Amino acid sequence: MGLYFHVQLLVKQPFGADPTVIRMPCLGNSDIRRAIAPLMQKHEFMGKRCIPGQGELPFHEDSPAYLAVERLHEDYKRRIDDARRERDELYEHPDRGDWSVAHHFIENLDPFYELIGNTLSAAQSIDDNDYISARIVWC
Image: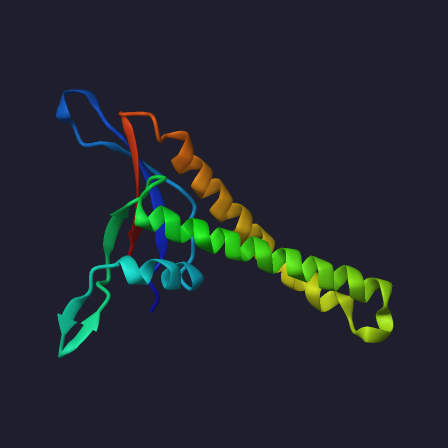
């Protein structure tokens, strides 16, 4: 069982009503968990420190969660760029190996890279708006 991470935008309502929650697409559960896990408050369970099954962290440009996701995004960019260079070199020199392996790696990682970029952009776009905030939640 894995934890899944979602960024949510919270729109404040007049007169103190509960905020409207706008859910962003799921960020997955593996690399994003490794990026966010050091920030998550651990709980004691049978003598071990464990990540709780659900929780949330603020998600704005200066928040630790945002910066962790931004670092993951930058890491993916480097990995994609390296794979593109490898693919292009192998395409030019087929005797050195199969370029399609690097190409498939790019095709698999690129949608997640774009998803993270869109999520970061959404948080950036609301940064100066006092009526909208963002958080990253896991469950």
